[in-house]
Image (cartoon, rainbow, N blue to C red; front, side, top):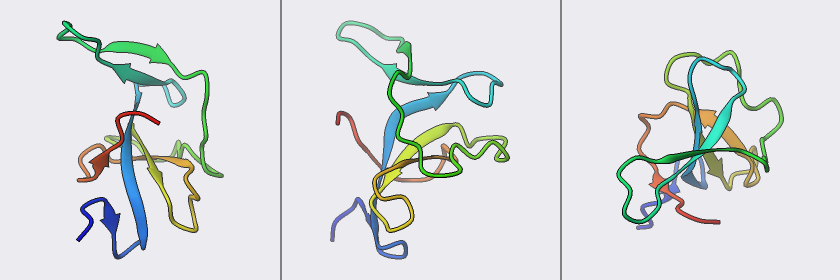
Amino acid sequence: MDLCYDQMKEAYIFWTAGHRIGKSRTAFHWKTLRANRTEPDIVPMKYTNWAPERPDYLKYGDYDCVMVASDVRFKYQWSNENCYLRMCALCEF
Protein backbone atom coordinates (compact mmCIF):
# COMPACT_ATOMS: atom_id res chain seq x y z
CA MET A 1 0.00 0.00 0.00
CA ASP A 2 1.37 3.39 -0.96
CA LEU A 3 1.34 5.67 2.09
CA CYS A 4 1.10 8.84 0.02
CA TYR A 5 -1.95 7.71 -1.96
CA ASP A 6 -5.34 8.77 -0.61
CA GLN A 7 -7.78 6.09 -1.80
CA MET A 8 -10.86 8.16 -0.96
CA LYS A 9 -9.67 11.06 -3.10
CA GLU A 10 -7.96 8.77 -5.62
CA ALA A 11 -4.90 10.99 -5.56
CA TYR A 12 -1.38 11.38 -4.32
CA ILE A 13 -1.39 14.19 -1.77
CA PHE A 14 1.69 15.87 -0.31
CA TRP A 15 2.59 18.72 1.99
CA THR A 16 5.06 21.25 0.62
CA ALA A 17 7.25 23.64 2.62
CA GLY A 18 4.77 26.44 1.87
CA HIS A 19 3.21 28.14 4.87
CA ARG A 20 1.20 31.28 5.59
CA ILE A 21 3.03 33.58 7.97
CA GLY A 22 1.15 35.69 10.50
CA LYS A 23 -2.38 36.95 9.99
CA SER A 24 -1.98 37.97 6.35
CA ARG A 25 -4.35 36.17 4.00
CA THR A 26 -1.94 36.23 1.09
CA ALA A 27 1.57 36.08 2.57
CA PHE A 28 2.58 32.49 1.88
CA HIS A 29 6.30 31.71 2.19
CA TRP A 30 8.64 28.76 1.92
CA LYS A 31 10.18 27.42 5.10
CA THR A 32 13.65 26.05 4.47
CA LEU A 33 16.17 24.59 6.88
CA ARG A 34 19.83 24.84 5.97
CA ALA A 35 22.53 22.57 7.35
CA ASN A 36 23.76 23.42 10.85
CA ARG A 37 20.70 25.58 11.57
CA THR A 38 17.96 25.02 14.10
CA GLU A 39 15.50 27.68 12.92
CA PRO A 40 13.98 27.70 9.42
CA ASP A 41 14.62 30.47 6.91
CA ILE A 42 11.46 32.20 5.69
CA VAL A 43 11.60 32.86 1.93
CA PRO A 44 8.80 34.68 0.04
CA MET A 45 7.24 32.64 -2.77
CA LYS A 46 8.39 33.85 -6.17
CA TYR A 47 6.65 31.00 -8.01
CA THR A 48 3.12 29.82 -7.27
CA ASN A 49 0.87 27.17 -8.77
CA TRP A 50 -2.43 27.67 -6.97
CA ALA A 51 -5.50 25.78 -8.11
CA PRO A 52 -8.46 27.92 -9.20
CA GLU A 53 -10.04 29.75 -6.26
CA ARG A 54 -6.99 28.99 -4.10
CA PRO A 55 -5.68 29.89 -1.69
CA ASP A 56 -9.07 29.84 -0.04
CA TYR A 57 -9.14 33.04 1.98
CA LEU A 58 -12.38 32.08 3.69
CA LYS A 59 -10.59 29.31 5.57
CA TYR A 60 -9.38 30.68 8.87
CA GLY A 61 -7.53 29.02 11.71
CA ASP A 62 -5.08 26.32 10.76
CA TYR A 63 -5.47 26.43 6.97
CA ASP A 64 -1.99 27.90 6.69
CA CYS A 65 -0.13 25.03 5.00
CA VAL A 66 0.31 24.40 1.28
CA MET A 67 -0.43 20.98 -0.24
CA VAL A 68 -0.28 19.59 -3.76
CA ALA A 69 -2.55 16.81 -5.06
CA SER A 70 -2.69 14.72 -8.23
CA ASP A 71 -6.46 14.35 -8.39
CA VAL A 72 -8.75 15.63 -11.15
CA ARG A 73 -9.70 18.69 -9.12
CA PHE A 74 -6.19 19.97 -8.37
CA LYS A 75 -4.09 18.47 -11.21
CA TYR A 76 -0.85 18.95 -9.26
CA GLN A 77 -1.80 22.49 -8.33
CA TRP A 78 -1.69 23.87 -4.80
CA SER A 79 -4.28 24.41 -2.09
CA ASN A 80 -4.10 25.74 1.45
CA GLU A 81 -5.25 23.18 3.99
CA ASN A 82 -5.41 22.46 7.70
CA CYS A 83 -1.85 21.99 8.93
CA TYR A 84 -2.87 19.10 11.19
CA LEU A 85 -3.91 16.73 8.39
CA ARG A 86 -1.66 13.68 8.02
CA MET A 87 0.04 13.61 4.62
CA CYS A 88 3.41 12.75 3.17
CA ALA A 89 5.88 15.59 2.83
CA LEU A 90 7.41 16.61 -0.47
CA CYS A 91 10.90 17.88 0.33
CA GLU A 92 11.96 19.10 -3.13
CA PHE A 93 10.35 19.46 -6.52
